[in-house]
Length: 235
Image (cartoon, rainbow, N blue to C red; front, side, top):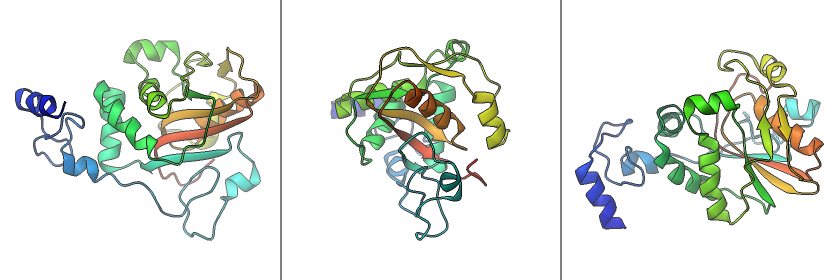
């Protein structure tokens, strides 16, 4: 398998989007090994519930989570949404470089993921799914399901309404746009679930997804994500 990767890189050379050097491992293609291995797992202070980075390690729980307890039990993520990790997510999500879903899932496997009854990816509305042709989070979840030997539950959670792009709106506006747009369609009563997302910004999407799952009877929801951005506020 190793030699096959070397052969593929010789036949189909590509430049690393971070440093511009040639990719030297098919698993990380188009990234070079140095840039890929340079992706760091976040180890700084963070809220023990939503995971938002905090200024001090003395801050165990952030103000937002103290004010309103989230529907999920905890958020685990690999790194900060920046550099090579951000580039990899963009290539997978917007450029359709599907092969990156495997090495990205291996990153998630390094996290202290609790035992669970099922893995549920954050869903796309069917119109958005048709435009992109695949759900990047579902693709990562398939590999993670195999890695962890936890059942993949693709049809449990669905997005019933198309929402406008959330990039340039505040956390409160995101929550308003996403309110009641996620619904469950299978029996999940009493199950401990893993909710998989690619990037967490304000946390509005994972809150609404987790709320729908808990409302449907899930015992607990732990959020697993590749990256966390650093918004001004976690609202």
